Length: 324
Image 1 (tube, rainbow, N blue to C red):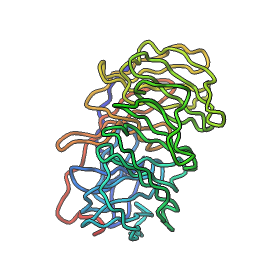
Image 2: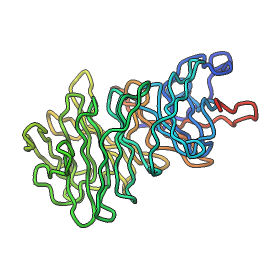
Image 3: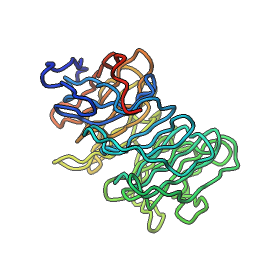
């Protein structure tokens, strides 16, 4: 497997007009170093982070594979939509009393769960992007208990992992945490498949559980020998079947497994720091946000040659301030 360096496209294909983007846009990301939402302009292998579309954000998150997101500016919550088409819309959200550390999105982008692992709370926002309203709220009294939050395709199921005093995988559908599959140790990573099946990879033992949420029972389970220290997992659909990608912390690799044969099929080295799989375009994922002075790292699941790509951030000029 190879690491590819992404270089800027020819200026003509990446020319940006005010509020509008020309050329291919792989997706949008919140860029913490510049406090802005920026496009990934170009195809992986020849992509760059474009200029800010919305700037001045203290916090932000973009719905995966959609052109809308949420953010905080001057302490106020905003819903941001129509990113990149020159008619960006910023709408005030209902006030959320606290600042989150992360956001989990439904697959269709209509529901967001903002949450804090340190503050031990989750707040659901529905009706995004055009008619946002506050949904359910959850409090976790145990210090450090919330570790990961995920939503299914329509935001109807919320599943969390706990660490600390009461570890495991829990379903919040009933309003209170219900333990799933009897998992009582800290799960390293969880994800939903497109069909709504839950996968939980148990930390340390590297046992992968395929869970039916309707009954709360385990359909299948097996060990992924190369994924004991996985930070995140993702189910990927290919023409040849379904695969599971595991982003590991120790070896700093993405390990690919065939979910039908249960065989390991590929190992891709990861440069930089990866924290998770954030969908961008078809078959592409940002491996977490970038740090100041660093590039964005993108994984592309090309069936012939899956690879990691280096996406540089274009320097921002004074006139590229984005929507204020």
